[in-house]
Image (cartoon, rainbow over all chains, first blue to last red; front, side, top):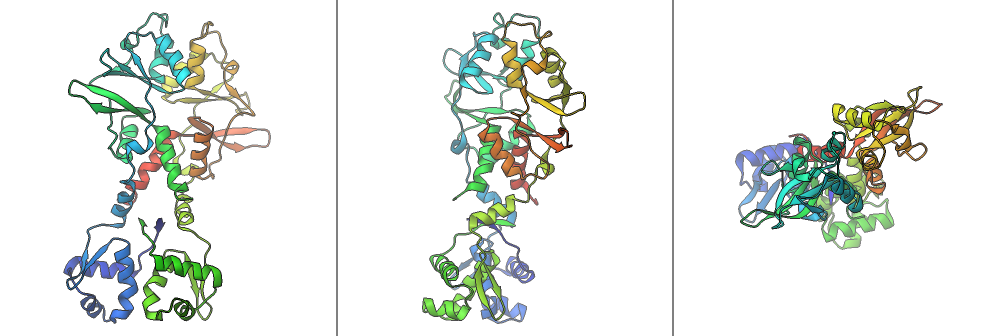
Length: 212
Length: 212
């Protein structure tokens, strides 16, 4: 369950005391604030439940080193590529631009991955690459895709164990729509998935719909 | 500040009691649970801070009607289209498919909006629409875009005051990449922005980077 909480001035003060003096007992925190232990109990419970503080019997409270931001990040760190990846569509490097466009429509995807005869990744084709070719002078049925594709080692890839948030950052920074999800084989990369801005948009939606 | 909390069995129980009997005093909740008021104080403080319960002096605790999910949704309800929209690129309905593709590359966008002579929205052109035309038999310089565009009233639109989460849902449900952000003028819709899966991906990233 995820929600928003504003820490009170007193809770911020307690956090600071534990940061500076921890591990420290509840009694000693209360002393520093000139309050009773009972008055502080709800605040300490909240700070502990929220993950800011941890408590050990006979030792006292200590600071976990997590800020509110890190706690949110912890939450987003539970979303991995493998939770949202789609099935990849691959083509051979010898097919024509025309056939690649037809394949894109048949499979209803915006990105194709090009593989060699060992099924290893050698290129990526976006709608943008294919559109660029379509306004060229050449006949689309005669241009092979390996002339227009983005090729290794210029392909941005990801692994299924990567954090979705890191892939989102790559998509924005490199201004691309999709990444191949790959597996290293020793002689190259096998394409096992596709991660697109559509997958990220679905993850964004799921944050809102979570646990309904 | 947003973070994750697991409610304890006792807290869930308290929530249920207040749902069924609220407004109810702390003493009466304690009685029902056969516990002391002091024991319950941290739980009541947490449930109140988290927004599940509200308390009024001399009346007692009452249920706010907000589930954990709604509380997260409250948070996502602070993100609007206007916070993330991009600048739209528009073309006239008479231009050719060829010129539209060139415009898409010049402006580096994936969607063009087609307007009439009064600058009102009449169509939308995606990379997919243009690619489809490019594998047809006709010369691209001779096909006007209004033959291939998606036209009113089949255009999914949004307003700048719409919630980003609602637009994300539309993009996924309708399987489209971008929506025009429009303003009603009485005689039609003026295009004032563009909202894409890239914008949603940026919002997703911002959730992680927030307040760093």
